[in-house]
Amino acid sequence: MKLSSALGYPMDYNHPSEIMDEIARVTPTFAGVSFQRIDELGSVQWPCNAQAPEGTPIMHVGGFVRGKGRFMITEFVPTDERTSGRFPLILTTGRILTQYNVGAQTALTENNVWHPEDVLEIHPWDAENRGIRDGELVSLTSRAGDTTLKARISERMQPGVVYTTFHHMFTGANVVTTDFADWATGCPEYKVTAVEVSPAKKMSEWQEQYRATRKQTTQILTTAGAVE
View: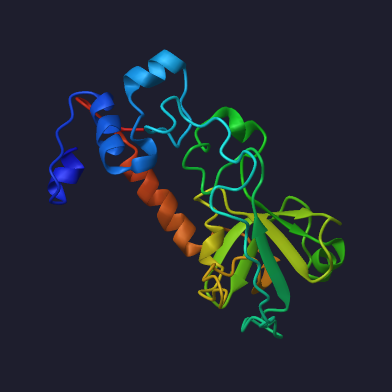
């Protein structure tokens, strides 16, 4: 609430239920939702309103609420991103089940047991040609930027293609991807980026700065001074 007030929109709530009441006032599909209703029913699935006072556990019964989907045929338009002598590999990024996006909801949980860091999967042929060994640090560079992470040699990837996830802030995989977007949907082009991979002895400059800044901003002040 202090942040909202500082941004010019004062808010004053005495209980989370008041926030839910405000949502119900301004959002028709949540008009019947309240903390009291949730306590009574255990859970409430929207839409919840005068027509469905106890919510709508199943939205589509007998037909789709908004009608059937409309399919549009679109012409294939190739990306402007191209491999070259300097950037001969294609990077594609994706997700893994145990982490969510950039770890905002999962990075501080026990999920890290399954996925503690982002790694770069690279085909054995590409790794051998670059002198890269499994588990070693590599530099991932594109026209947009660079980052450093560990290599995982894997035949899951085709020669010429490398893959990584983007769940950990320290990896910052999206600093490597370009600003290109799909012409029809505007979706960022995270799946096609021309890159080069090479052995590395240290983290990239921005990662070192990130590590130093994070260390400073997560210190706990005590009467004896600043400590970890």
